[in-house]
Amino acid sequence: MKIVILVKQVPEADKVAVDPETGTLIREGVASILNPYCEYALDQAAKLKKDNPELNIEVTAISMGPPQAKIALLRCLELGADKAYLLSDRKFAGSDVWATSTAIKEGIVGLEPNFDLILAGKQAIDGDTAQVPAETAEQLGVPQITYGVDVVITDKRVEVKRETETGYQILSTKMPALVTMSKGSNIRRIPSMQDVLEARKKPLKVVSADDLNIEESKVGLSASPTQVDKIFAPPAKSGGQIIDGSDPKAAARKLFDYLKENKFLRA
Figure 1 (cartoon, helix red, strand yellow):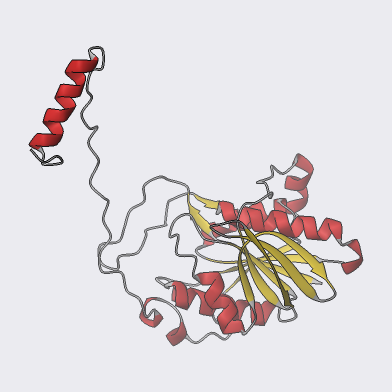
Figure 2 (tube, rainbow, N blue to C red):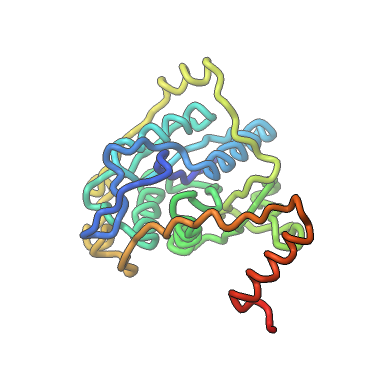
């Protein structure tokens, strides 16, 4: 059985620079980490592999990004992935969520065409769009279940416990399928020293657009239907006004006067 994990590298810094011409993040020179929600997907894959030894599960991690994204994929290998692919090419630069899902879809078809299950984090902490996994499932023509917290495989079907605003749902679908993972009972594990050493022996291959026969017109900034008009940092919030409460009556009067002066109260 083949499980594909879609992962993303995200900037480690709290603040990143933005290219004023293209409106895209400048990732060169910025350290990357593995998106935390992707780690939950990896943890789920590791649990499935442990709980179903008879399925002989192989876990493959796939990401799209600059060369430095190999650091995130190495982390995947440390956390239990058996092999990893990095889709890296200047032709991918500036891709929006649709162009990204196009490249990832082509990567899956070209590298792991016989997959049974795709797991991904529910969203990335840098963009928070939560669109790439859904659009990848759409392009692959497979069913998808979002916000999963636990996954069980039975008789060529996947059963998913997913979180909702009011509780949980249990949904089931045939495989191949795609499931996005929330936290749930999954944990962000710390690999052992043995895991770290073994990861260096596992295959990690960089794949270009030409390797996958992806047409340049289908990826990158020019192929992205959404364009960023402007990116800017929100204004810093002030510290507010503190009212000394040592004298409750005086504090109440001061608060009342403030609310009245700012027209929060009617006279």
